[in-house]
Length: 84
Image (cartoon, rainbow, N blue to C red; front, top):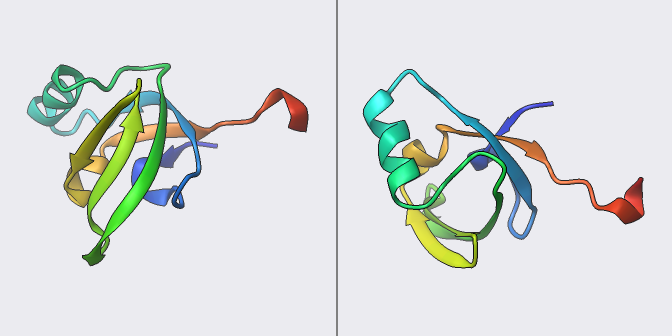
């Protein structure tokens, strides 16, 4: 089941599967700032107004994104080995 980064709850982890390719410039920009397929990403904080911006942890880095940009990141939910 594919989700978007904006679908995750605080401290819920997902694995980046792809980017919404409807905006090539945005997907390129997301890759340039450190997002890549296969990386784990975890939302840590949502802004007060409309949950905007979103701060996330990816590869040990803390990155803040506009909610509309975060929607372009497609994920699969992270399943730990303990739940298997």
